[in-house]
Length: 181
Ligand code: PRP
Image (tube, rainbow, N blue to C red):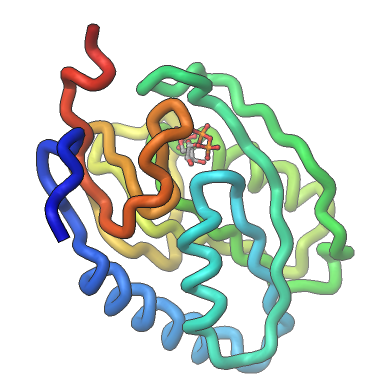
């Protein structure tokens, strides 16, 4: 398929993404085979990754969602993370795996870690599809990681710019002309 005209470069094709997600699913299935796994997807960026990951996990598990938002319409984090939505599960009964689309400053994971620790999660780990190679405001330990990406604005596979491009089946770097007017 042709590259979307707003992309400067494709970083990960649909095929590469599928292969990596399958590996992550195998690893998680193995590590949690004696646990009580609850995936908590971070809306909205993680929705596509979560849908693929859960089907790559072969052990019984549940999933839930939380909404975290910090970027608004811009391309840089506002520094404030707004959490909303209600987790339906009683976290103290579960080995919680936060499923994130991308880790950038680390503030979203920091806010979620604080929230889920307060809720008494039995164990807590992070699985992010992407992580930016950059100095992070907050250090993040990502037990499961799809890929590292350069410190550029990336879209696709759930990730957006102003709510666009989430549906792209690849991950690519957005052309600067699209957001620098
Ligand atoms: C994006 C992304 C992550 C977060 C990562 O969410 O999906 O959740 O930012 O950035 P951080 O490590 O600097 O906190 P965004 O606020 O854009 O909301 P969205 O997921 O609905 O697009």
